[in-house]
Length: 402
Image (cartoon, rainbow, N blue to C red; front, side, top):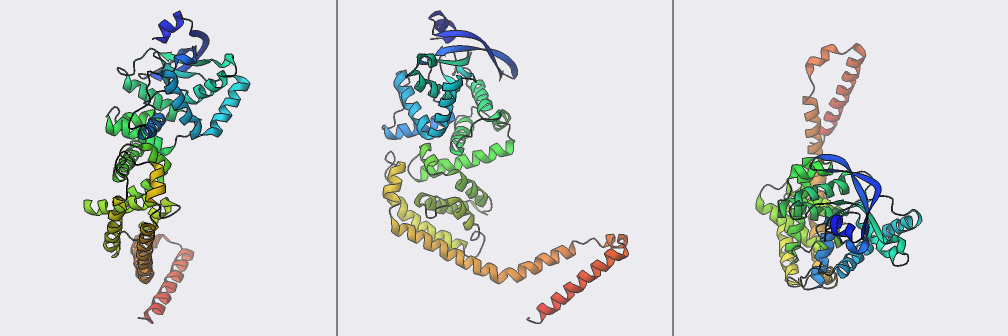
């Protein structure tokens, strides 16, 4: 079925007088907009958000994805995920379309696959149940094939979703899934291509790739490989972003692995209401004389926690919350370990604070360029002498205690 040929011939597609500008293959031009009957369209399973939801569907249906050949059932499954993910936004968009009709055209492929406009399509499907005038979706139709033009279509999708202004923000986990699939897993896009399409720097994209890899490692750690919806449910993005900062401070690969396992275990058990803040607290321990003791203790607890995990294929968000996180003994052991390490680290920090401040003061003083002194006027020289006198008094006062 080709919407531009069969659809027009069968009167399920009608050309309008509207156009929409798109940039494809590096060229920007105005494309005609068509009215497409809703039953001719389907959600794109390669969309970043939808890929996350499909991972959840697979977990609930013995690894099987919804059958796209049964278009109505497939669309109904994805529609439910879209509505449940943000019902307020759906309600707002639906009310707006009901009052003033669809104002922004979407983008679809000739086979009916939606590239841009999932939320509008979802709202129109719901409205069409009550009024036939909402039975069409206005969209540009690209005569492209997802297999032969995968890169070009993905670049266009990224630009529309992330490069244009006023787009609804993505869940950061959905963006991680997209980066992982497009750059790491399939190699469809390079970091440079991805960055150019999303108006980001290459450094920002590389960082997201690293966080995405941590997400994949965490899911493997909990026996739930590629079950990306769990990462979204557990709100992993910001804790993993903080973990990445800590890993970069590790001096060895083994140290980084031990740190990851400790943080993964605490995220899994949710030992703190704000896991992002929890990971930041670990920074106070890493690099101190108590680091090895802390990580070793955490490793022992982690080994016990891992034994309580359901087998691969049986891990769900619900099973983690109801079974694994209900192990209060393990949660308390992790909390005690963390509290003990933080207390020791803070005592050491307090004890060493005079030394650190003295070192900082010395560094600042040694940084003074004495050649500049000749250029100071009398007033400035007097201020400098007063400050040096205060410093001398402070040093004499401290020496009395030594």
